[in-house]
Each structure stands twice: as C-alpha cells, then as structure tokens.
Image 1 (cartoon, rainbow, N blue to C red):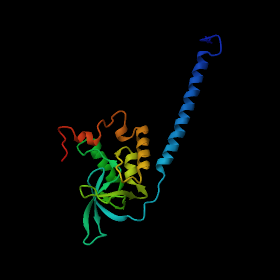
Image 2 (image 1 turned 60 degrees about the vertical axis):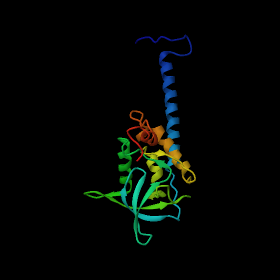
Image 3 (image 1 turned 60 degrees about the horizontal axis):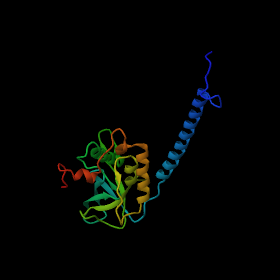
Image 4 (image 1 turned 180 degrees about the horizontal axis):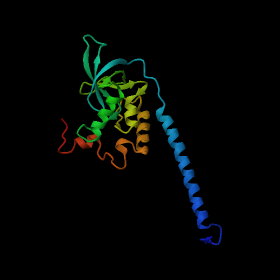
Length: 210
C-alpha cells in the first residue's frame, strides 16, 4: 500500500484535507437547498384575488404583457386590451424572448385540445388606476388560482416593472424576479441572458418606438 505523506507533520494529511473540503462543500450545499426551499415557499404562496374584479373571456394574447378580452359586463359587449400590472415583457422583435413570453402567457391561460389551444376566461383584479395612457385596462390577471403577472416573472419570461401608484403586489413580483435570477431561468439564463431591457432595446436606432 502506498504511504500517505502529510503536508504538515500535524494535523492534516492530503486525504484529511480532501475530506474536510468535501464536508464544507456539502454543508454549503445543504444551506443553499434550505435557502432555495424557503424562497420557493415564499414566492409560491398564493393569495386569493380581491372581490372587486371581473371575469372576462380572453380573445387573443397580444404579447407577454398584453391580452385582448371580451367584456360582457357592459352593454354592448366589447373587446378591450388589458395591460398586466407590474411587469415588462421583452419586445416582440427582441428575439427569442419576445415570442417566448407571448407563447408562455398563451399557454398559461389555455386548455389544450387535440387540435389547438383554447383560450379561457380569466379574472381581472384592478389596482388604483383603471387605464393607462393608451386606453388599456390595467389589471392583475388571475387564472386557475395563480397570479399570472407574478408567475411570468417567476418563470423568467418577463421583468418586474413596478409603477406607482399601482403597487399592491410589488413585493411578491420582486421576490419572484429574485428567484428567477438566482435560478437562472429564462431571460436570466447565464448561458444566454437577455442583455438589454425592453426599453433599452426599443431605443436602438433600428427599433424605434412605434
């Protein structure tokens, strides 16, 4: 058997040092797992939407932050555009992230049939402002018990974008973004990150704001 040589006469041999570093690494890994589990628990806590919203039928997903809905709560019924509060999706020209965010939102509010995705009704929860400067409704969108504004951020498809005075779920959405960033999801993927925010992308000479 080959004799082990000590780095110092006492107290460690190379094997003992290796064992020490292994234990330290495992301890750090356990701490990280506990941290991620607690963070996931905090982000995943779901609260019920407020009662002062309305249920509408989704007609089309315009982008990762905008949908068109049929509002039958008014007469005559009409199509309205809804801007999800507290998030900013990549521009549709900002590939591949723009289309990925749009497709993700479409799948989140659809039921798959044998031939196509069928868009479903969603619940719109307002905040302090009813509409933005473009005339779009501003809302938190709930479907199947999930706050989609938050879920899109958590999955790494869109950015958190708090805008006063609509701040009801700002903290939840901010925690969701920190989770996505730590986990490297979607636009936070370290191998292929989104290097420009949507606003920065639109300011490029070849991508003027329409």
